[in-house]
Image (tube, rainbow over all chains, first blue to last red; front, side, top):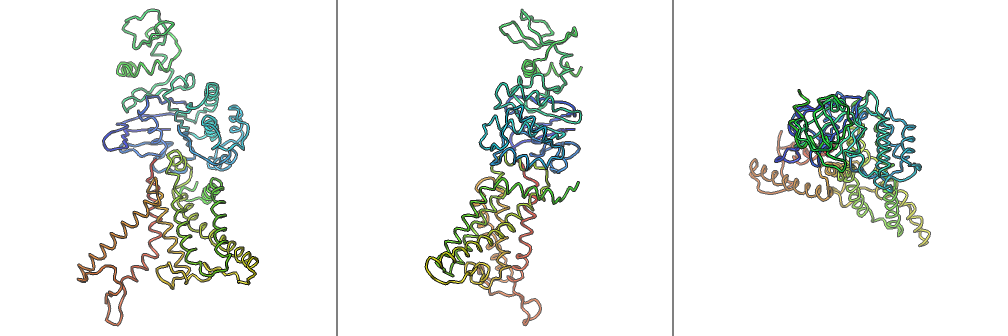
Amino acid sequence: MVDVRNVTFSYTRKTELLSNLSLKLEAGHIHGLLGKNGEGKSTLLKLISGLDFPKAGSIETLGFNPVKRHPEMLREIFFLPEELPQFTLSIKNYEKLYAPFYPHFSSEQFNNYLKEFEIENKNSMLNKLSHGQKKKVFVAFGLATNTKLLLMDEPTNGLDIPSKGQFRRMVASGLEDDRCLIISTHQVRDLDSLIDNITVMEGHEIVFNESIEDITKKLLFKVFDKNDKDESVIHSEETLRGYYQVRENITGEESKLDIELLFNAIIKDKNRIKLLFTA
Amino acid sequence: MNTIFNINRLGLLLKRFFLENRQRELTFWGLATLVFLLMHLSGSKNNASTEVILIFISGLIFAAKMFKIFNYTPGGMHYLLIPATHLEKLITAILLSTVYFIAMIVITHVIGTTLGTTFGNLYWGTNNPIFFELIQSPASHTVYLKSEMSLLNSIILFTAFQSVFMLGSIYFRRNAVGKTILAIIVVLMLLIYISALLKNTIFGINTIGSNSHFINLVSSENPFKVEEIIFTIIKYAFIPFLWIVSYFRLTEKQV
């Protein structure tokens, strides 16, 4: 679905934002693209959708070269940016205007999503809505387009706590086998129990790209009373309940993935984790 | 699926413009009608020059706003991701900045002039005939380069201006009008310099911008005026050239 091959990108000649980056993303998954601010997550999404062009390497999105911005590709992509565009349009008119560009758009789904987000009045003007409300409208529209590729850049920014839960439910319900969702965020907790593949960017490159299934098979996330210096411990954080640790899963014990803990572990010792997953 | 040009997508892009800019368009054309109305209240027939200047200025501002969406990154992203080809997006901009703008100018001119003259006659008790100066006597436009300029030539000149400013709006992210004017001045100065240099090198003439030099290609009785040939070529090739440059610039646009 998305194949990024040895891509290098920079906004200025001096500093490379992405360096020799390669990544393959498959349909039927919700990919979480994680990384600290300024690592190039948004840039990667822009490159995948054809908004920016790589300086070196190549990208294939839905079988197309995104640089060409082919309409056949664009009608199967919906990109929800972090900062939303301004429209002096009502929700109803926005739908009327842009839905025809997307052949699989479902008005029924759009209405249901809006209802779930408690946005009842479709005559509301988009420019009069709060950032959070506007985000909900675009999330609902993006999901209702039923495009094969849905890119979301920091989608939970601006959403209140109940809305984040609604967002997770809606995104999970919107996933189909031929659909690929890429969610970029630095608020890793917001994606808890939503994503099924984690990609981490660090130092302007992909340092980790694994499925949740593989992660929980190879890593153990557990609270321990003592801060053991066991060899299997990769990362440890002191909490009120004890020491929350990421360990090599030697025993095959099942545990619940903690994305934030995993992320911190990767940032701390990416080489060890890389080695563990390539072995 | 038609991957080069689709009339439905073009229709959707046009509809998008009118729906998104409904308020602005209504205000702008309402004001234009009012200006024409006020100019004809007195029944004066000497408004053509002022009208043409106003039309050129408003036209170039209108054209420079065609790709104003790139001023604002999220807007530019949204626009580039609309599932339509670059050609369709460009044709939409061309249609709006030329056909639509000219048609609306004519409509508002006719309405404004009719209402202005009628109200003027009623108020002043005069009996001035309704006269559409802009359409009926373009030869009187003193702002044109040549006084005998036809309506077609006026439209070509206007379209050329529009196209330059439309290209400017793709090239420059901010202050497109100012930067385009600056670019025009720089290009003109460069052309004048090159022309003077060529004349000096080839003919040994040390003057700038003279109209009195001929190249005798066949015989002394059949002189070709170089400026006229160049002017004709430019007249018909300049606008398509600008559109082609705009197209490629749009395809290369990154946000």
